[in-house]
Image 1 (cartoon, one colour):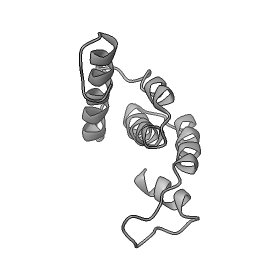
Image 2 (cartoon, one colour; image 1 turned 60 degrees about the vertical axis):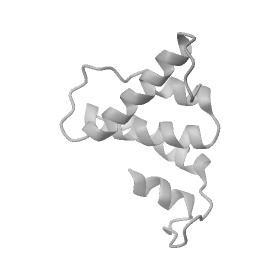
Image 3 (cartoon, helix red, strand yellow; image 1 turned 135 degrees about the horizontal axis):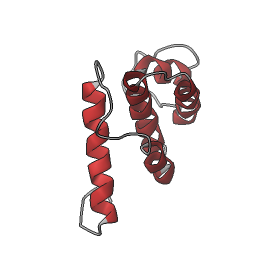
Length: 106
């Protein structure tokens, strides 16, 4: 999935320079399309992770929160456990923020 955002962000070419500016808007469009073909929980988890990160990096925090809605703790994960763990961390951050507790990412 990472290749999708890098390729879209740079006109089909993956940059070889560190600090190259990224086009998160194009990456967001790419991952939104990927959501429609995410047939199982593993693919959905990976797609949602990269879409969430692209939305956050582009400053679209409310949209990033919304994209986490289909994620739940009883998903059937086979290969994407790391992405799932990361999404769970983001969900826990949201729970802390909504409960009024002080959390650094609120």
